Figure 1 (cartoon, rainbow, N blue to C red):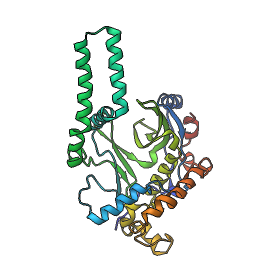
Figure 2: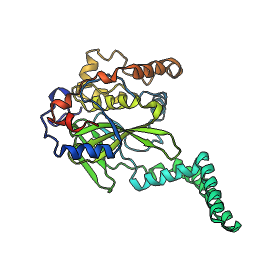
Figure 3: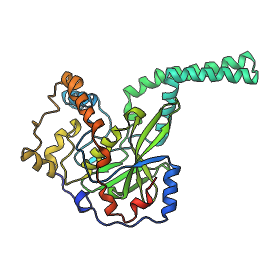
Figure 4: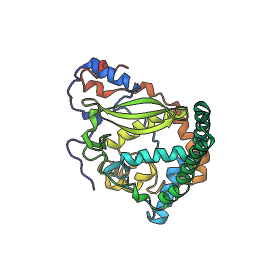
Length: 323
């Protein structure tokens, strides 16, 4: 069974922390990063996000196969891993996704035609440009995809990064291909907006280290699903909070007996579910009734009413984070 160290996060025992320095500069850096909302600390809805039908189905399939064919580090009672793929591979995957997508293919072909017309390039050059675009599309859509499906371990590797429940630490890879590590309580959660290459706006949940400015992405959703980021933050906090049982999600079900707080919680009958709840859940019912009802709770929850306990720990956090 896991053991917690003194630095582990407990919402009722957040130590007093250093105040922010250069508050005006702090606020300007937030505005420059398109941060639109800071989320509160330490008050929970107890609504989980990693219970989508695809997560439940993957969990049940993994149990059937014994984990055969699965690649990458596992989310456990001690660590929620992140940064499986190095930055250079992430950039390649983004490029591959752009060229493999039919919508982007049409846009690229359209742009190549406009470029030829605008610069009055001779027909041979136009043909070469078009062939390059079509060639990259075919490469990334078929052989590249085929290779990754059969050899995912080629780019998916455990870099030792993640969220560590038992120690209360967070470690992630920076854009410099270095790692940054700091206590969970030194990060502030923000939602920022981004305009995607195809046009629609997406929202990201970011954790920003308040004393250095380093940040890491927790989740990203389309604009119509922005409210789900609140549930992402709620779930992550409870995962890191050793005064709370592990979030009741499929991936963590088998690890519940290994976490002291969760084991005690379940032994007292507070979970209210059998030990194999997610393993035996009726998928048809969950997809048609259970999950839609759960998602409705997430969308209707009064997120703006949650208390921010971190403001009591950092003297001038509210003043510096007004965006």
